[in-house]
Length: 485
Ligand SMILES: [Cu+2]
Picture 1: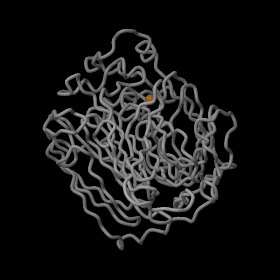
Picture 2: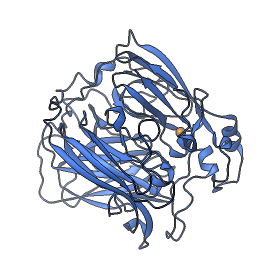
Picture 3: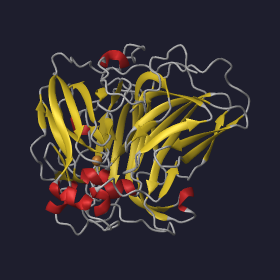
Picture 4: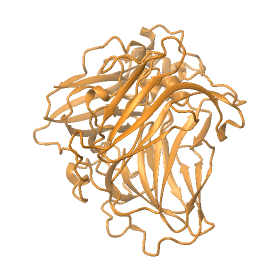
């Protein structure tokens, strides 16, 4: 068991009503990251991405090739790895051929300069077919991140257009192995030979259109070989457009060491609800040679095995399992005394409510709906569907640079919503329904009728999005932007 550093005891999943008040608790326990190099002194990592259709297969496609849209000539998302302080210079080419199918890259969770954030119309022009665009930034944080496009995301992500971004430099000591665990579904027909519609009215109005084929690293319930009796860092990333999983591991001790890329005080993993775009880093002590641990999704009535970790070889460790904390992120501490409180209500529109109430229309494509009818969801009564990205509404809120803000995120719907903020990482203060460990997050899962308080210092100027990361909810209205100036 975790002993030396047990600051929290498996808080996930416990019922409770108290808010966890001490926002600094997530930082006090560990050494901070080293400061990054001065601008111009960094090592530059160059990355070429071509968004393009490729006919490719994955083990979970049962031998079929599918018209995937990818950033590289491979079916699995490319993995980009940097050290803290490196500059990432990316040349993006839009090789898609459908007229008007523009792209951009949003570097999810990276607290970067506003003009690098990859939201078309808000901070950059859309990159049309045949055009290119360059990004250049130095990520300020270590951890597990990913990137994806930010327009027609439901289809582009649905066809595979995403990549993984890892920034190294937070590990207190070397792990015996570092393993990516990328969760995502595919919306395939029964023969697994064609895609189902990525956006449906029934899905958009309710919990989203779920994939029919689940996968981890491109395979259904794969066996992943790991060293035996070893401390392995699992980087679990939910890149699905829709599905919320509640992950847990049986057959190995496991501790969560980071949430949304950023260090938290290690706590035992019992189960953790992961909405789309959410990440956790988990250190496990693998079984002895020949043993297996299993990653489950407990969200379904019957737990679904997602992947098996098969241990091989001589033991690597002898002492108790006691993973050290990762280096802490350098994130300004919000002044909760002085913070202005801003309520945010996530709700269904009248149209959304009637769509959700309509029965028996599963699979109805939304494409024929007119724009106004696609306003199913709203933030603070304001609905901005993805089809209207070029029609910029007023900001949800204007924030003063350098000030602390407390946001009360309230889910007024019977669905869950993973709410994502661009440009900043929230300090999660607490929920009215659950005990949550102190942690940072760029994506916070709101359960039905849950209220979660978050805080942050608005220290990154610019125009930033805030939206649900169930992409069908986002694209039918549950998105907005805020301004920091
Ligand atoms: Cu949502």
